Length: 437
View 1 (cartoon, rainbow, N blue to C red):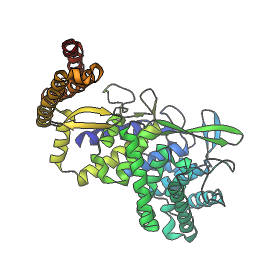
View 2 (tube, rainbow, N blue to C red; view 1 turned 60 degrees about the vertical axis):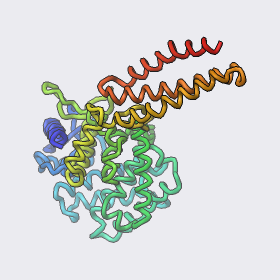
View 3 (cartoon, rainbow, N blue to C red; view 1 turned 45 degrees about the vertical axis):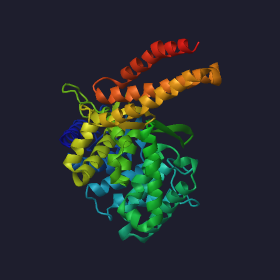
């Protein structure tokens, strides 16, 4: 996976180049590379760099920025005190080596616990109004998981919050339907601290989220999804990068899924969002979508997904298996499995041996059906006999298509199908119909 290693290096380099000062002794990242930094985007980058095993540049200045909850942005002073802001700051402070007894950690933790909804034991994205958000709840539980071992109240909050997430999944709550929600839940339930708390119930629910994400990836449904919320008196929208999140979450939650065609296709789509041109100013950064901008949060999530894939591949995948998968994907030899037909992520694979056997079975079957229809045309009637001829020639056409498509893998399958079925429609069917008339 040397290419993944190289791409991880590019993403890290982009983050290093994107660091900006806040004019108050702090350094960090904004949502794009040319806006003032803020604690949340900075914290996300710190967590991703730590997970990738890369050092955080200018760590002391980054730590100074993350400690603050009010910073200057392009629109003036902005408060970063919502539950999700507090959660990311707690995680980043831990990654930066700040002790649990530090006033900044204690203050963030106290504020985060005070924001918890007393009835559901979950968290909202912002303010005391609106439904409990799975995004904010899972972010808070990630932050609490690292502190639960030393604080009984934190451990209790972690247990109650995990129970809420599991209940939402088991009850098929509408908030868990989007792919980003499944990804957030799967990443949370994959943490060792959570798995120990929940046991088999958590394992079952995590498997459910994995299956939902796999289905979405196979169907190509991963896209930018929106979550509405209120920030004071203003309605706002949180945009989730479901492709970035799902690829990372599904591989983290179940390492075996790295072999799934939907995951491989999702990873290919994700890597195509990374800028790789040598002279590109944003080289290494990830776009939010094909038409979107290169942003710090897209790059952070792309980096986390690549880190998860690299870890799984390095630990589990035999190099010979990788070579075989490449051959299957490229399909450069007739003996390699070819994607003969596909629809919404569901594909039929055949090599030239299977294609030849299909042709050998379909050709005599189709000819037999058509000949019997011709011989017994008077007894069957015009409509039935012609229908049987069409049915028989369809068998022959399908067999011919699979035989040619698997024997000539370099020819596009759509072109092969068009030629085969055009020939049968324009030549053979009119001839047979004429004989029956």
